[in-house]
Length: 350
Length: 249
Ligand SMILES: Cc1ncc(C[n+]2csc(CCOP(=O)(O)OP(=O)(O)O)c2C)c(N)n1
Ligand code: SF4
Image 1 (cartoon, chains in turn red, yellow):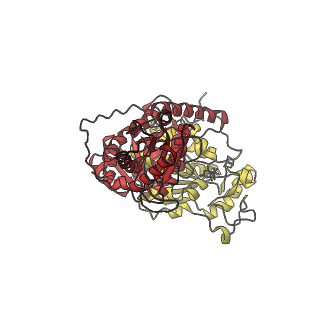
Image 2 (tube, chains in turn red, orange):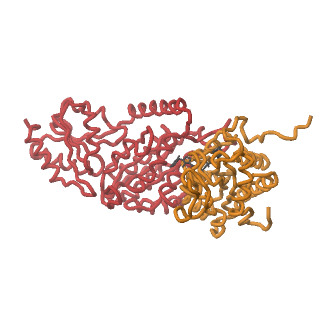
Image 3 (cartoon, each protein chain N blue to C red):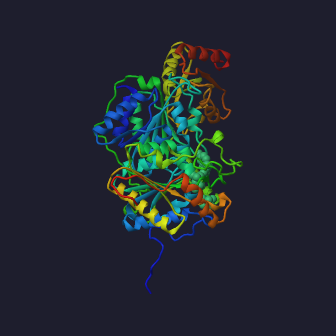
């Protein structure tokens, strides 16, 4: 199965009933898949007039109680930022897929991880967080869609799934779970008409009185610390005896896996930590690893974004370096290995 | 004693924050009366805009959404697609609908989205303090057209009702005013018709309500209704622009 189809099938199996979106490469094949697949199972695929409209349709559908998603890339995700802020403020669940591409500006459609800051640090206005997940295989793309919808519902918060054009096009065998059970919890807060519930339900993020706005912020802050406590996820690879630890997610982590193997074969003790949740960032695991590691190298397809979170997690216990290719360029195994050797001979090896 | 006048059940018993002479309150009341008369309070969902009328979210005693500036028709689309048997309406000002939200209302109309838009045209941005709106008349002075709107600089006011009929998805389009008792009665008929069109599943409906904003027009409430009658109605003629059935209001 191709990555794009895997996300689509994952969403269908996760009980996503509505998709609203607007065409953009490199996520178009996902929309082609869903445009065919959703009506087959009696659900709705709808093309909106813009990403601004799509995210607001998502807001309406989510507030009406439905499992709903949209997907886009770079420029389209930027247009959704106001809507995402409203979704977070009104505490509405939804899933947004971002197939990142080279930027800034119109940039290109080549694979990139340049939207890390935008996704993990807010992106839109106001004080809020998205839950951000970064799979790195086609199987994980399928599985993470269920997780994304479940987390969104559990915490009443938008969830973003980050991937790129390489993962979208990648073909890998996938196991689909036929026994798949969807447990959608009731949503007593949904505004579905008073006929469904006692009193009046209101989907809203407007609090004119600062004290009331602050009360919502307190609720959000408590929720985010709960998420931060419960939902940090990462994968470790060959950490035993590793002096140098690569930190990489998504496509970059696949390259780094090969780097770890090559380096180990040459006697350099390298390991990898792969954040799967980008927000909450797996700070606890990295912070603990920092007690026994000589240095970290954050390998990213951007000018250096996640490296800031690695530094915060390491908290001065070890040096943290960055290696990146950007603008749609993908780091090669050889280049990263060179960088590892440079660091190793420059001190981490002694 | 027989009670002959009371608050519609679909309006909450809370004070409105609107300025004296503002027409938002009349429009609210008419919508609430229609909801009561059609007996749809429990299955109607409203979408409040960004603007003075953001507080419709608190005033109507029905389930409500607050939408971002201009996007109420997209939000209403999402709701209606999930809950096709509910009555879904938006309430939007002229800045909200005819400037920043131009894409959303045109495409909701083009899709024949089975929702109702109540469009309050007061020829000015109310909430942000009286700036020029897309519906501000030529020559009209606002905070951002202090010499009066000039078409050389700002183009011409948008006539929303005249734009919509060619779109096949539109079922009902009407322009009304609420500046005197006779027009209020006609306005209510149009709003009721729009809701009935939606209930019958006939497609997109929009009612434009010419509305006074005495505060930002710099006029007394009485001067404001006179100004509306003498200046707005000639440029924005009242009437039905598209109906699914024959007949005038
Ligand atoms: C994206 C965005 N841009 C601008 C604003 C500021 N803003 C708030 S209300 C408003 C104008 C509303 O005017 P109108 O739609 O005519 O409604 P009225 O207040 O006159 O009823 C604007 C521009 C905003 N809230 N969001
Ligand atoms: S500013 Fe104008 S539109 Fe707003 S409440 Fe006052 S009179 Fe009404």
